Image (tube, rainbow, N blue to C red; front, side):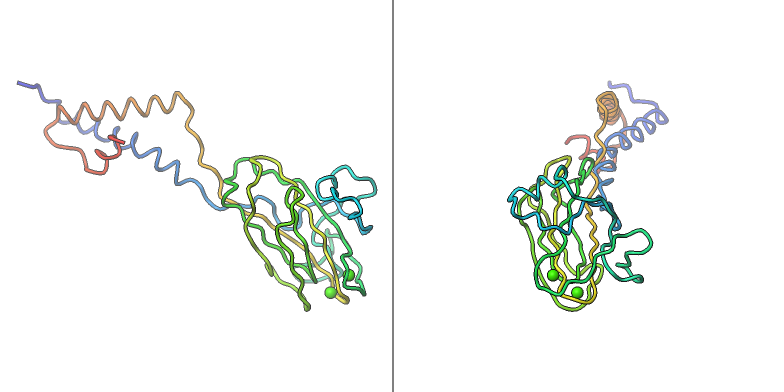
Length: 225
Ligand SMILES: [Ca+2]
Ligand SMILES: [Ca+2]
């Protein structure tokens, strides 16, 4: 005749098994949308057209003559795109051409790149390059808003990526700012912790086999996965 576990010990093993088996699900659910690049970030920029160099959108980090300044870029002193007190002045332009070229490295380490999205506002138009590839462009008259345009990314590098934009004003107000979001990646379990949880899960299953009552169905199913 099989000797039953003492009732109190059996309950403890069931609780430990439930905690051990549920832990991976709790860690997986830790992924959540977060800011990869905030508005008002620092950019390299130039008002001198660099496009005679077809590689400018990847070489901007080391091209001579580029300056460093914070977004927002613009000529307004109030609202979401005010260049004062910490942004960068972008003078008005009276042509339909691009006037300002900017770029920065963005580190996606710790983020799920497949979930990444970009958001920008611009007066009046933009061309967005990711690692040298043009992925989006638009032009619109009138002022802008947070966020007038948004979209997803093509396949990104797991760490650093190069974001570059050509920006065009058509007169009067100027404005630009941008943000990037993505889900954070779940925190991987260190190997010793994973082994400990596996052991607890197995211990709980043994307790179930020796106990009088079956564990909750959900816990049983998790432990069998
Ligand atoms: Ca222009
Ligand atoms: Ca304008």
